[in-house]
Image 1 (cartoon, rainbow, N blue to C red):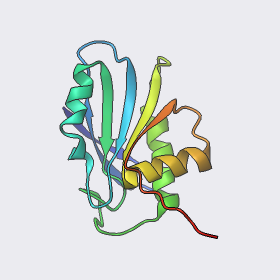
Image 2: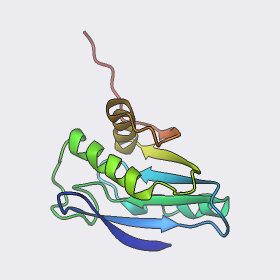
Image 3: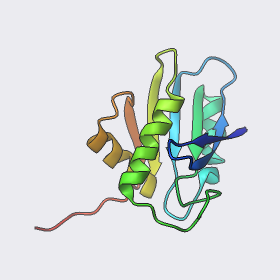
Length: 137
């Protein structure tokens, strides 16, 4: 497990933890936690995926975990912009695939970001109970 910080364009710092596979990664997975949670929500699945050949990154989304102002809601547009930046920063240079693993709120952020901002460098989504709702018209 390796910890570091990603710095967004506005200077906001997002703590990041990574689990690396023993050899060359099969793919990269960016894991997005649910509401009220933080990066270590993936402390079991991160190492398990790494043992199977995946490079896994999990970060504290803005307003959660060890970020400044924890407990403040920054809204989905800001969380989406952060995710786009994170994808750009962590994109594998060798062209291997990149997936987003989103749980609850993290799943919603992954869905909205890929739909709204057209994140072409993401090859797929892994959604675990994504926070979605049906809007009645």
